[in-house]
Image (cartoon, rainbow, N blue to C red; front, side, top):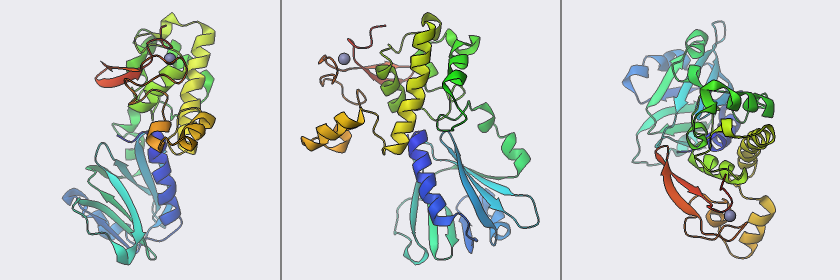
Length: 277
Ligand SMILES: [Zn+2]
């Protein structure tokens, strides 16, 4: 599943494609949304916001209040961008098509889509439960230390807390593995077992790796080292991670074999030597 950084990068492209433009035509593939097509045609795309793995397209409706198209890609949703006269011949189910002055944004296969007013957006069942967005500049190390120290999270194993969207929105499996490696922590550790310095380091690692991944196109490994690896012939997938999907390979830091074990329902990749705590 794409994680916060991947969703935000897609949102950046969507923003370039349609933000500020008037919608000439909009199509919804789900029957429950068909009735919105006429009403949203002629509105102007104001902005594209992401919250964790959810995307929110804000529409200026002229005299009425703004409306919002909420979508969550889950496993299968894919955005595609093209000229309006160049829709691809796809086997996937088209769920949203937005045509704006010759440019189009198409969402395929996603099923979690809704058109909401501001009240409905604020009370949305999924958005309501989200913690602070990991990519928001308003989310700080102090916020995360406070959350890690709270009774809601401090007694739970970090391997589960990291991907709980109510703790912080936008982390998925690759980021949890990479963050725990960077912080030198086993997925079984609880934040109540950490001292202040370790909590600060972990909170900083969460923000640092998620933001680096957003800016560097998905690379969480040390950027200089990833560059060297690619110069030596490694491809992007081989160079981008410290531990994720690297089971059986040597840890870049200590040379031990990276291991893979299921933790909190998902495959967790870790170095048994560097993540002993
Ligand atoms: Zn190691």
